Each structure stands twice: as C-alpha cells, then as structure tokens.
Length: 357
Ligand code: PMP
Image (cartoon, rainbow, N blue to C red; front, side, top):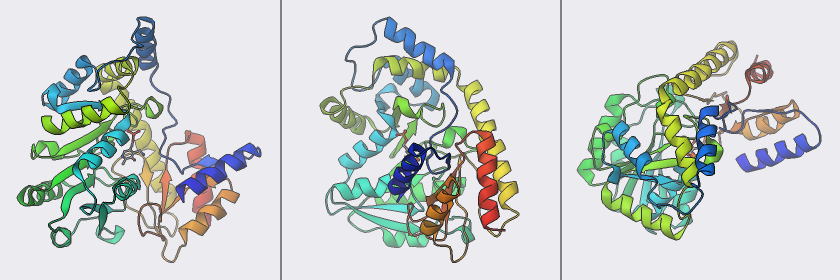
C-alpha cells in the first residue's frame, strides 16, 4: 500500500500537482554541509577504492567508544536496513519464528517471510498507550522462536518504551535464550531518554543508523552492535554482497559523529517544534493519538475509518499519508511523517484537521 501511494504521488507530481508528502520517513533537512565537505575531501584524497567489509577502523573505534563496546562488536552496513536483513538472515531459518510487537515497520515481516520464517504478532493498542502485554509475549514464545524484534522508539507510533518494559522483555529473552534485535534508529534524536537493550544485557544485538540522526538517508550508512561471532558473520556476508560501504561515506560519518551534539540538538528541536504543532492542531479534531516521544511520526486513530480509502481521498486534496494497514492490522489509523518543510507541515495538517472537524 505504501508503494501504491508513492507511485500515485509520483504520477500526480509528474502531472504538475503539488503534493505535501507525509507518507515517507525521509527528512526534508539537508545533510549538514560539514559532513558533505568531509566526504568530498576524502574522495579527493583517494578514498575511492575497495575497503574493509567490516567498516573503516577509525569509524568502528569511534562508535565503539561512544557505545562503550569493543570495535570488534561493530560492523558498518549499508543503512541499518542491511544490518537488519543480514542479522535476520543469519539468525532465522525456514520454519522458525520471530516475535514483533505491532504496529511495526513492514520490512521486518517482509524480510522474515522472504526466507520462510514466520512472524508472530504481539499486538499493542493506542488505548493502552502501546504497552506490551508480557503474558501475551510469553505465550507467543515456542521452541521455534529465535528472535524478538523491538523498535524503540517505534515507527509508526513514536512511542518510547519505558525502561522497565525494556528490562522485562530483555529478561524474558535471556531466560528463554532468545536474541533481541533492537532497532534503535530513532533513539539518538528521541525527545525522552531511551533505554537501550545494550545497557541491560550483552546477549543481544542493536542496529543504528546515520539516516535519521544526521539527515543522511541517501548515504546508506548504518551499523550493528553485536557479539564478535555475529559481527564476523555479517562481515562475511558483506564480503560476498556489498563488499564495503564506500570509505569516503564513512569519512562523512566520522565528521557527523565529531559534530554530533550540535547536529542532533538542532535536528531534534526542529522535530519537536513540528510534533508540538501537530499535536496542537490535531487535538482540536476527533482524532485520537499518543503524543510523539520521538521524531517524526504520528499514528492517529479515528473509529470506523478506512485509512486506505482516506489516503486516496486525501491525495486528491494534495496530501499524502500512509494508511495504518501498512504497519499491521490498523485500518482505523494512519501515519503522518512530519518530514516536509515547516510551511507545508502546517498546511498539510490543516487539511487533515479539516477532514476530522
Ligand atoms: N528501522 C526503522 C524503524 C525505519 O523506520 C527505517 C527507515 N524507514 C530503517 C530501520 C532503515 O533505515 P536506514 O536503512 O536508512 O538506516
């Protein structure tokens, strides 16, 4: 459905129509110029050759220092998406299963299904503040369960799991010998403190990305933090597939890390302003939603809504959104990605607010 909407957006734009795009989580902000400059300098200095499948040593060491792990626990990947695919590919076999709290980012189930693994859905609801029911989680676990995927902060709800929940799920996974794949790509820019699985137990793996934190989606740069054995396996997979993330891209990443406090502060504040604006405008409507605790999504609900139909109707009014059915069985919800320029965000939100007066 996300794909169909994107295609329709492209078609309408080609016809000369202006569309406000809330359908994709691709930040409108430019990559910081210092990062672009650093990558360009690296290219000029000849960092344009094949390089390490594990990632550049200095980048791995810098990340290791930031996360308090060893560089051997880090592998640089082409976006966190590759880290997710590679680890699922290595840890899950046909006939085994993975538990995913929903609503969820669709790539998890598409990836699992692509090699015959089953996805077990752990449903959470807006009405219970998206809380995970631990009893339900325990009941879903069987002898074929290999992975639990957590996405904290969550896409599409922008909800951050409280520390106790992260601890409890990690303890359950440790007791049962199940690995957690914790997708923490929004954690560094979240509005509230986000507890990492890594701070609780060394048995699991986390994936992170430069995409959202530094407005670098197109650079394709992410990483996994895992035990040495899994890191080595991902490195081998890199060797036979993408070879390496370009070394000059990694030089840009080093610069981003050097300036991270300043860059993150600016990016986070921008998204916080937009989230506040959205909450203010939408709170005057009949929509129900939880206040975002991280950039940049909202996942409102309207009882009885057919969000797929709504998405197409709204496109005729010049606003693109993602229907809730793209994130599990959430037809009454839709997702807004506040990743358009500020004036467009306000204009688009007003059009949506009008529909739910
Ligand atoms: N995880 C989540 C939850 C996402 O929303 C996305 C991108 N939309 C990714 C991972 C992948 O990001 P990237 O590959 O750009 O790091």
